[in-house]
Image (tube, rainbow, N blue to C red; front, top):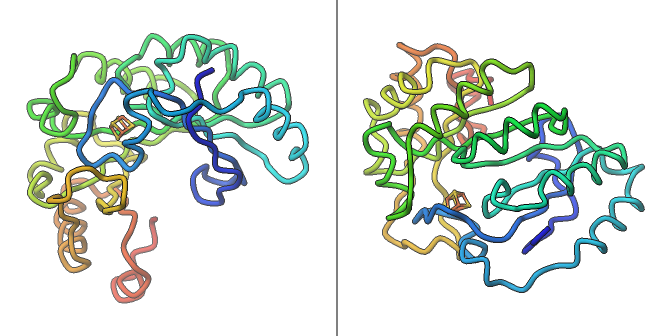
Length: 241
Ligand code: SF4
């Protein structure tokens, strides 16, 4: 598999598990806010798959899971084969995906190769392209991914990275209507980093986040918000991160 990055340990990316993260090469979207923009083109130097699999062999007592992220993993022709190798070592597997290749997701689920799936829902049905750039895109694929996961027995989450100026309270409510109210829907604040290419993008302040959370929750009590700092959780007794 074409691998551009590897994080040896994460305690926060795979709910309930100590995991490592594998970042695959190349993405079919071109999001301005991408934290892994260096992996989009697929031109970065590749890491040795064999070495990563050997690392997994050595770390079986410490790691429980492997997160396959990107880039967009479902573009990898040998993704199924790679995950089979990881599963044969006894690891749980989480897939991070942009949801545009539901046929690959379906194959992976049919083969029982996944334990958790996280799908980025970028924007409303109408304005999806405001986030993903000028790329080939069909909203039907995202809808199909949502449907497949909702009809499956697997643990999953939908999540939206909210950016000031792009995601208003009404936009967020429209996104939830689009995917259907779901207990597994998370909002997370945009964070700038050295790899975010568009330096004009803004995150929300804590007060703004709290206001969004309260307003959206009135209509959709199941939503959860990530990224609020502890003091807000103490103040408002918001516990569902
Ligand atoms: S879909 Fe994900 S990996 Fe691809 S450009 Fe967007 S944020 Fe980056």
